[in-house]
Image 1 (spheres, rainbow, N blue to C red):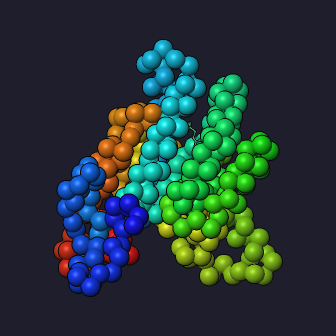
Image 2: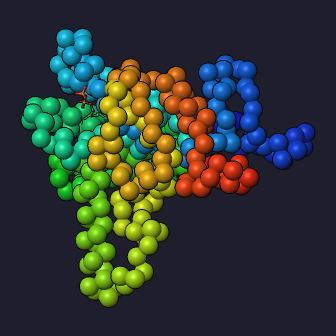
Image 3: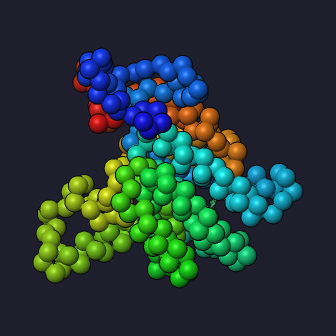
Length: 283
Ligand code: FPP
């Protein structure tokens, strides 16, 4: 049996089916997960992994050391998603703006990406993780594109956590690209301007295969969205923590999910409307 915490239990003649996926309190070795309500899980969590540089500086180390340690947090949070039952995890690994950092740091980040993919791919595959990328792949070094493409190919049939790396990504770039593609389709007669609505526009975004994130976490105390998934985060709950990314581990992640579950998501409706007719969270 899978060790996923919020999984659909196997049907049993001893358990009536209507008891499945109800709020439950587990008192077992995974007791730190026990406060999570499995009926109100976000399907998609997006993270801005901030604070690697400051974390390293606090230790009198080079900023790159913070990025290395950040990979340990990435591994732990991906595993936590599998354990809890989070279906989509998007990580802001390199923004369009990050290209203007010192060349040595950019090179180190690209090398770290390649080495991490090489080192982790077997484990990711074994854990049923499916890798995706969003962003301007043409601007990435050829070696990164090659490793990413191989990793995505290896994991393409996996059915567990969808790990989406935002690389050379910025939301304004993505929205402008979407607008250009739609305009091209209109000019070619494949689309009509009047048909453009939210659903159709989504199909032009990098994230077209994924549901919008319900929760966005940013570490390291900054209260900004920084050109990240601006269109997709329209109704997301935002969670900010002072913890630097290299220190952000499973207990912090669980805390963020519990905090999200305590909020009332109204989508422009009134509190009374939501209480009478609650939105479905974990369909
Ligand atoms: C922000 O911290 C972090 C980044 C720009 C890079 C994030 C990269 C990793 C966590 C490692 C590589 C990831 C993968 C998926 C292989 P910052 O440098 O802006 O920190 P600061 O605000 O303290 O300077």
